[in-house]
Image 1 (cartoon, rainbow, N blue to C red):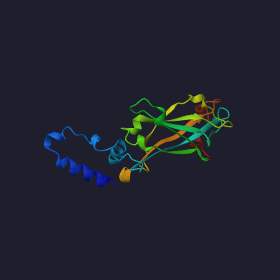
Image 2: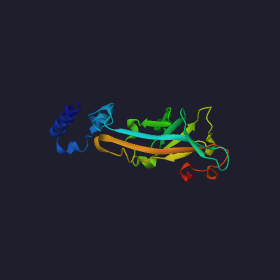
Image 3: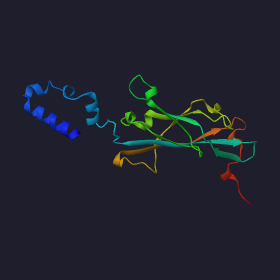
Image 4: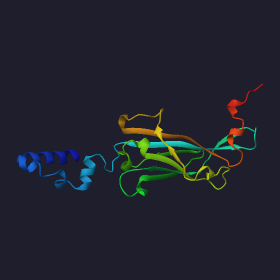
Length: 188
């Protein structure tokens, strides 16, 4: 269908005198929907962009104890992208973490053409499950930058992957710096 429309446009343009070509833009021949499909922004996705990461809680029961890290299932997470235009809600996507604290967003096609996606988009943890030992006291709706995913970074076949890494929230009690990191322990 797209090829037929392009051929029709080429025939019409070739039939017009040279002076008329400069005054007859494509908008006169095609509807906005057809122009979007021709440009690759139609209903059929021409690319896939995913953003993934994990939300974890670090808990230190008392100074000198082990720093415990566990995943946070059921946390509400958002990817928000700054784009041109007034509708910021349309530039956000929401999901919840799975049973392992992982999240994956498939960004809508309207955000695929955002220049420098890693600079325009951030991940925010909006809400934790009510029974969570961690709290959003770290800074409510703090922003975490995304970066190209080293393991899945490929723009071949229209697939791009980004990661926020592990977002580590801390329990409000003992600062994690006063705890023993598991890798710091020496087994004797």
